[in-house]
Image (cartoon, rainbow, N blue to C red; front, side, top):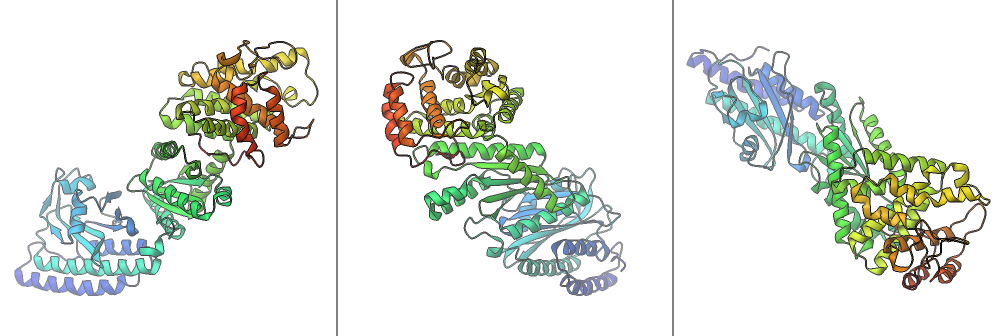
Length: 565
């Protein structure tokens, strides 16, 4: 079909052209109703605006569901300018295009210069002519915006012609509304009833659309896959009503810490996903840091309510694959690698990195040492988590400050790191050690504190680690002597004394290849016997009611509070 020509057209012929324009609108309305998806509709609408109505460049932006976000794609004819991708928040009325969409009236001007605020989303280098913005209104709400413009001045768009285009926009809005209803992209059908987030079906459709855009325009989306740690156990312990409240809180936290252009959805059960259109790897990592920091801040505020605390594991992937399934698999794989890649590593990362401390090469050092130790001593990860759990219980039982609790938590995670210098055969030996081997084992607290001494903000945790094996009575010889410096009594750091109790209790209650695990009453009996000898008697007295209240040894996958503070 030949484009309508409006240059130097006599008045009578102009009226005929306006009638032809209205006829084409009627034909277009029939074609639009045949579309079965929004991408097909977008391509058809922009093609019609170019082919039937003479615009060089046509752009259709559609509001995505109930999040009121305009996310547009220029689907342009071959001879048109490549506009790329245009995003703007519909609810932000300060944006000039959002204002037009919200007001619901067509906007026309003869010329659009690069400095005009309306030109900002287009990134123009040269003027364009006769731009026309046509809001798409369905059920009284803006659902999109149709934009046409010309690269040359071919004469003004008459009021009659504009009326025809407004009618065309109304038909487009009707088609969009029908499609949204058919695809359940709007309203309650797209929402998870518990959290209010988008549901999996809506997310899957949005991800497929972003992958199609990625293939066409080369701008990949980023995807975050998020899991609530140990949520099944939490439900079993605290009940589903409290579990539902945790899910709602997690949903609100995620929405509050992403960009306005991002889509947050509940993927199923205790899993969430965040789709970040056009986000770089750096932006995705920044979002992860914001989220983890928000979780830490929330847990600190609820320090006296551990049952309301939760933790998250996050994986991310910037699309390089050509299918939505592969993008999801990559993000999901990273999430489970993070969940299983030495839990102490994940806990330490959550403790330190979100606080803005520049770990830099220190992170590679710490995490590399942890991985090496875990490979030599398969029980290291679970032991470190249990010691962390007992230490946290003691800190809260004693009412220690969040700062001191955090220092002790870091020390618990790092307390065996110096054993990385000990070979696996010695670490796992069931029989007695030679004197030289015993000296090597005794060196591990000093090795850990020396290796990490350059990291200034670990100064206090490393001091706790260095003195974790000192005895209350100061004895440095005979059976089970204290080391490395022979400190005694309250000259031993409080954190070290707490760590020694936590470490001993876990060692006693866990089965070893060479002996059976003690029951909790038996382990408590050992703590009583060691009070005033290797252990602080006052601390033991305070901790006994805590240990007596335990039904079973702590589960390393069910810490008393998943995040230390």
